[in-house]
Length: 134
Image (cartoon, rainbow, N blue to C red; front, side, top):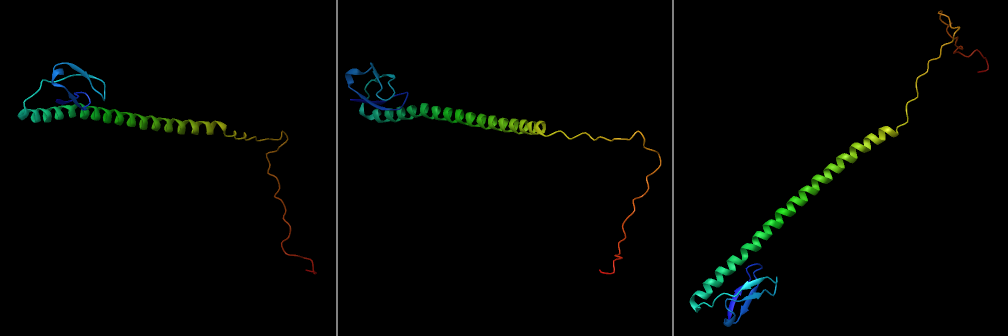
């Protein structure tokens, strides 16, 4: 029995020695993998360890790529939301200024018969009561 791992997803596979050099389909990711030539017992463990290390590299690369993509997506979303918030704030302020009732114009009426002399000062009522009943 030949034990090896999928170079795309790292899934552990087994094949008969008669299938060495042939292509088999991975049961996990369904990619085609060449069955390696059988190794003698002493180097089989070293080769298996090397293959396991190599199979981890694509996983790590995919993980880093996905993490970078998510960072870009989150950063872009935050930037977009900030822009929308600023836009809404500015437009809300402009809309509230547009909806404010206009201030009435100040109208100063002058009489055509008004003279240049000043009007007499109004008389005031006495402040002390002259009524003896109080």
